[in-house]
Amino acid sequence: MIRHVVMFKYQQSAEGNTKQYNLNKSKEMLENLVNKVEEIKYLHVALNHEQADNSNYDLILTVDVDSISDLNAYQNNEDHKAVGGFIKKVVEKRACVDFEK
Image 1 (cartoon, rainbow, N blue to C red):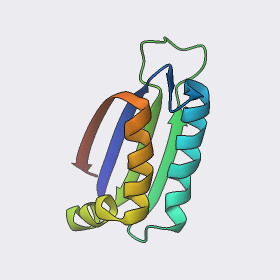
Image 2: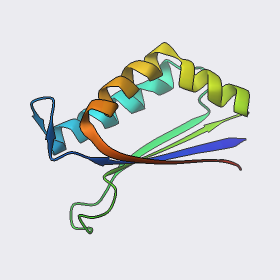
Image 3: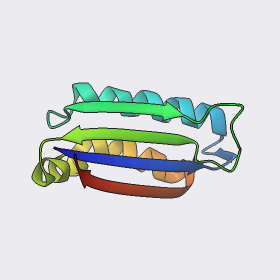
């Protein structure tokens, strides 16, 4: 099993929307991938707590897939690419780790 963990730090405003709007939209779009990408075995999206340090990353995505080839299929899926296209426009930083679970 491979766990894919990605953290995003969002811009204060982007694409004509507030940071909070873009966070909520990203969360919804990412959660909808469960129904669209067959390789996903587990997916969880969480937002940084509103009272937590503002220097923290804003959103974390955790995805489990069976193998590296499934991770590659997930990342190349057109639905995933569409979500990624939106997220790239509204974030300022991204950090990722893929590891065997």
